[in-house]
Image: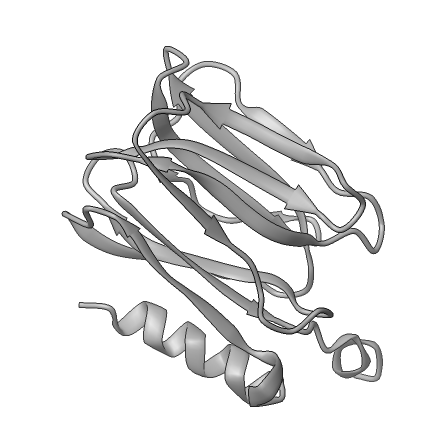
Length: 163
């Protein structure tokens, strides 16, 4: 069921020193189908949709110039954080009940995107290595996202520049 997430995890581990990879365990009740949001290069933007300023309805990551498929649904205008060159996501916090109630993406430049309603159980995700950044997300979706896991690693910029 989590084959996509495991494959993406293997790709990240193959391109990063294992001591620089970390995984933030799942939060949320987790019902529904598995998803994995991956891409090539650094995450350069985040979009999050919430439903009536209540729970998280959907989200999307942009890797370099390419947007990932949307996890969940689109409803109205997205809340968006465009990252600066060399800026990286270093923390995800929020709250959950049956669905993800709120998400906060924090960057190494001290900027953040807050979306949703801060009610429910609190979570806080961050890498174990100080130079690592968010590389991909996985979890479950049943309409809106029902769970979230974060995967952190140091981006190997040398391999993409020398090909």
